Length: 313
Image: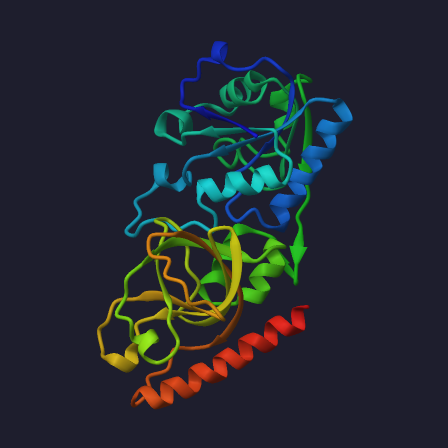
């Protein structure tokens, strides 16, 4: 997949002149609704015999329009999003820097520069996609701006489990730890990443050594609790059980950590960049009176984890 970075104003003389079908959106999560847009665009590109391309953005547009008191956390970082695009057959990914200069374009100027200017033969987006002020830059109004220069394909709402397949709902599911519902919406297991760092080695002391993972900046972790996970270490996926929490058994006011015990895994992998897939919420974090109670619970968590994976076979 070719990745082309765009910064406004774009010098179109440096871009390819080949025709494309252009799927548009921020695509945070690349969930079922997004996949319908991408699948539709891919089919149209095949029909026309042109490249399947995507126009997305380096950061959430709200950064330009309002103050954020906390850092924005994404369902999919840009790198993860691009990897998913490639898996779905995207041939050209245009990544535009969302800046004030870009946001100030009129809808017609945006169409001229970022649709016609990218040689779109057809533009595909979800029913709620906008390319400027919401009252004047809707998908219903896009054919007027296109003026016959490209086909407009509006993808209708996709509903999953009675909810619109939208990033807002996906974020709510992550924040509440509703991983199985989230994975149904995403159509694949939710995934985060990070680097294995040193911890306090308490897990090893209890017979449950853990990978302490420093999460990649900008990623959205599930709610605190214990989960069934798989972890990719150096290209191999391992089954495990992970906890997001504060290790409250060992004291109050401790920092939040992500620790994952991999089943039947003993190697030291400090410094490795790993991917974590989240499969099921098991329980909340519990404060035990001492190690024996915690060890007993961890043994039950391991049994539950092994049973889960056995049932998936």
